[in-house]
Structure formats: structure tokens, C-alpha cells
Image (cartoon, rainbow, N blue to C red; front, top):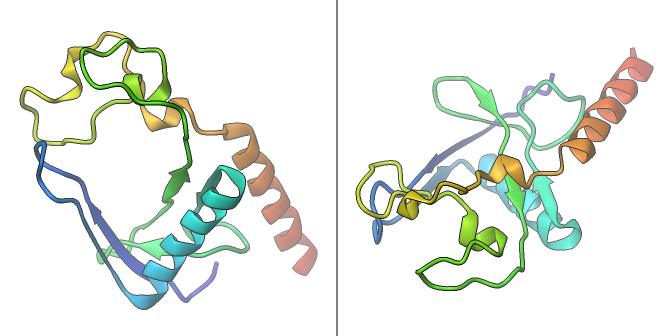
Amino acid sequence: MKKDFGLLHIYAQVHEHDGAWIVGSRIGLTALRNAIDQALKDGSGWTASGYEAEGDYVMASDGEGYDVRVIQDNSEWGAPPLKAKTVWDRLESPYVGGGPYQRWHLPNSIWPSNIWDWEAERKRMKESQEKQDGQQ
């Protein structure tokens, strides 16, 4: 496990029109930037939680490592009323405080995990483990 962790806190919007906040050390913000750059290049990018052999590692200030997954989606978006035809029209709202805009109460809303390429992540984890095993 890599010892140079970047500190990174990502605070979601509590309600619509609230600001979202990202606070991080230089290493943490660089890890996030690298994940964003990868998503812009390949459609998805991620940081590492510290269990992989390589990657940019981030953790909260309580010492718990976690992954940040970044997804690029360029499908169209339509304002409400939603027609639920694209990812953006179905994606769960980011607000954590409830209220009337907490996903407009659509029965078919989806979470980011529904559009993440889990097969690519399993492949990355396997390659990382094989590389780590080869170094021991």
C-alpha cells in the first residue's frame, strides 16, 4: 500500500442551488485532477483507495481511504418534465438534504453506479494485483 495519501473531502449539495465543496491537499487534488483527465480521455477515471498496487490515493481526514469515480457522459439533457430518455434525465439528483428536488420522485431514476463500467474496474484491479504480486 502506498504511503503518500492525498487528503480529499467532497461535500455534496444539501439542497438545490447550494454550492458543492471540494477541499484537498495538493496530492489529493492532483489525484482528483488525474481522475478527471482520465475520464476526459477514456470516458471514465478513478482514484485509488489505497489497496491497489498503483494509482493516486485519497483519504478523508479520519484516515479512511476511498475511491473517487469520475464518469464522462455527453448525452443530451432536457429540462423537467423529464422524459427519462437519457442518462441525465434519469440520474439521481446529487442533493443530500431532501426536499422537493430530491430526484423529482421518478420511479426509474438511476445512480452513477448504474452507468459505471464495472468490468473495466475489475480488469484494472486484476492487473494491479498481478503487478503487485510480480514485485514481491
